[in-house]
Picture 1 (cartoon, rainbow, N blue to C red):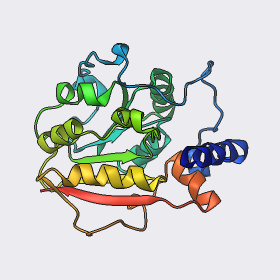
Picture 2: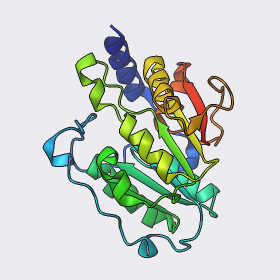
Picture 3: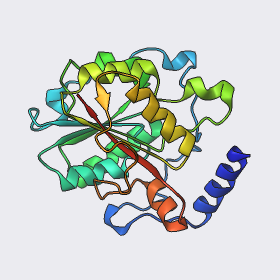
Length: 236
């Protein structure tokens, strides 16, 4: 039943959705192909780790703190973050390659040198991309919910991901989580808090997006008055 409601809401959103004017990027700027909404990360083709890029070619100022956005989707959130915070570097990792290619094209159009998008299965590639302490901030926003119980193992926040982030994040670094599906949000939080290196300084959810920049899904949910479940955790 919950999956049916989610599909109905998505259809309503797609029928009349818009994005905030500050993106400067039309919502329907085309990919030139039909894009699958969900990709099974357990398929054999996604089990090969993605090697790290030449970071010195990606970022103009390599020494800036690095924000990792896991499941970056279209990339509009991260592009705006890069504009608002030029003293940070940003990396979006996404499993749908056409979205990555389009986001990097948008980055080039905007002339940004502190943001990059990478095609990868993050659960397979994370430890291959970074060294301990490389990350200063992580966001995981509105990941694919995979409602059916037999598909829960496809969800992005798994114990291995949490353990890898505990190693790669600097002490005191935040992890921001949000979803419009309560069960998904609570499962993500539980997975992180099961690891001794993460804690919730707020002892529960938070009301607002602390960055003030919504993802497309977040903007659409706000327009429809749908609930959003947000959590701000920290690496000890």
